[in-house]
Length: 439
Image (cartoon, rainbow, N blue to C red):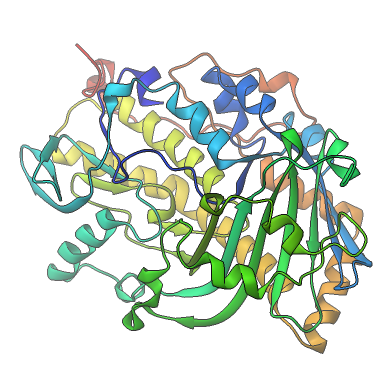
């Protein structure tokens, strides 16, 4: 977005190279119009599959219910799609000039003054910028820096002061190609999420067919919350293959819905270890999103599950970029106004998405007789009109970049998009070219 806006930027990446670990992610009509504006829509369609249903099974792979997402394209004009993270990162990085990504730059501290904000890295390098955007994940070093400063000033809320722990164990992976004759479901040009919920095992398994006869899979366990004081939350916070083997061995017996008598172990054995990751996360909404010239984006401020993080981050990027393009000066007063508007525009929607994610996780992950009844009601007795209403709510908000030609959403979908957020009124200064744009 910054590239197309003409905003000068530099990406500091802590890894030595982009490592697209993890499983898969989803995009839908709320984020795909922006991809169309950026000229990336066809690239994403080519490497993805449209999502139709979520199918649910018991441990014997007997159907216990279904959630229908097949009307999302009819409602919003774009399908819900699933793709693996390597494909997602490849599309993004090929559209960013190589010199604008600096690798092996782990940010340790951030200092701020009237001239700007400086990111100080572990290799001794330092980078001064007008603003710093922390998009460095759930265990954000940028967030830790600004929260330390806010706490010293007595401005950090009690919620944000609590250490981020974990209440979910997740094991995710993307397999190598399978023979579609072995798993005929891979021949479909759409994806159904196949979700197996055992009665007694504490885990539930999600299987998602991908293009090129591959399978994305995830094993999720809800656990009592643990905080970082034990050290485990940071130990397992990275997306990576470390600590994955033990959990993979423990869940090999789980049923595989693609073949009679099949197990998850059959899929794990066809998944490279560098594409298997174990993580521990807590779903959380952070109330402080910025301090002075430093602002957060993505999992640094909202940590959802259910594959929602990428979609939320794209929309947050749209809002922030729109606001920055119009900002008439780099004075702290104007930056604060932009960041405040960013929080106001996104916080309510982020809270709602997080609430939906928590509700889904609870329905899927909780065990016991009451949970079984709740699941049965959720999967089999929700009226069609209510399901359609939920899908409409999910994709009715479709913000676009105001400085690019709009995607033709008025000719797509039966439900009109909500009006775009109004631009900030900068008075006569708003007639000037944005302060972050080349002059």
